[in-house]
Amino acid sequence: MYTLYSMQRSGNCYKVRLALTQLGIPYRLVEIDVLKGDNRTPEFRAKNPSGRVPLLEVAAGRWLPESNAILWYIAGGTPLAPEDRFERAEALRWMFFEQNSMEPSIGAAYFWLTLVRGGRDLKMHQIEGWTEAGYAALGLMEEHLETNRFFAAGRYTIADIALYAYTHMADDAGFDLAGYPRIRRWLARVASQPRHVTMEGTPALEAAG
Amino acid sequence: MYTLYSMQRSGNCYKVRLALTQLGIPYRLVEIDVLKGDNRTPEFRAKNPSGRVPLLEVAAGRWLPESNAILWYIAGGTPLAPEDRFERAEALRWMFFEQNSMEPSIGAAYFWLTLVRGGRDLKMHQIEGWTEAGYAALGLMEEHLETNRFFAAGRYTIADIALYAYTHMADDAGFDLAGYPRIRRWLARVASQPRHVTMEGTPALEAAG
Image 1 (spheres, one colour):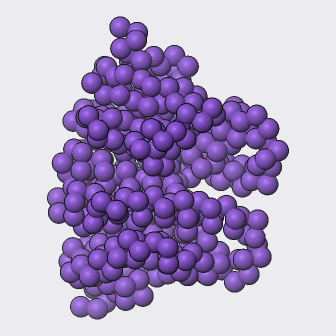
Image 2: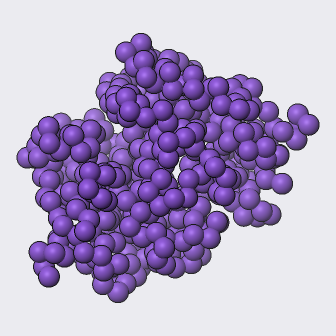
């Protein structure tokens, strides 16, 4: 059984919990609260030198970090992971976009403005950059959704899961989605997929079972 | 035949030219000089709304952006793209790391400090953040190379190509690799692969043929 090292309120970790739940894959959950320094212990650093979550133990002593790489690993061979050559590239295109354009803007804003006490003062000089980059990313998503219901392969895939995590927190990160009606409809479309769970509601299946 | 929209001095574009050359895939090259605004024309925005390069026309009117997604597309089915489930995840892990931790630090520093005239003054407030994030990324690479010759699957893959692009420019971006002997040996190992070409030396194969 997989063991997932995860922080409940992390968008990157939520992606993995959502996909595991939708795929019906049981897993052990270890909560790593980055705000309390759980990720700075020698034990955790031995598993993942970057100290980041999520981290998946795929087999005894074999560790996989990076949320989007974990999504490909756990969803491989299921309809959530497109394997047609162009469809796979489309999904990867949006997942690299997510890690390069969205997580460093909306994700960073969420972390520092919502999770870290006093974070707004610490990071005041970066807020303008996050805002500009975040709205630019949302604009590209809105444009894509003019002619597409999902982000890749014409169906719900791990590309949607990857993008959903921080987009659905945009409000909490200080972004106003009022001008992005297609994104709001797509968020509702993702939330209506079978076995969808909220960020707060994703349990450790083992604990819940 | 593929058409690649590329800027000669972009690390993200170099990745694709290097892989196409090593795979012996002919392509047409269209130079898009971002510094001259070639990417802000309506014609280019119609192809890629983000205005970014590289952009690969994989078939008439079918466009693929995002350097690392392009690498998976062009290298699919070759030894450069590992398809074993865990090896693929390992390659993806380092490629997502590259877009999340390296391109926004060493890549951004290279762009603003080396390519853009006056960029150092414009971005002075960001240099400290780039420096810290860039050295942290280099530290993780150095640690991985303690026990590995390459980044995934035990051999030279597109994960190495992705990481090589900005790592081999680190000097130009103001980073000192003196304390990273394993990275320097890995850079030499990558540069010694068959059909390797330098960033400046990557031609359009059609033009060269």
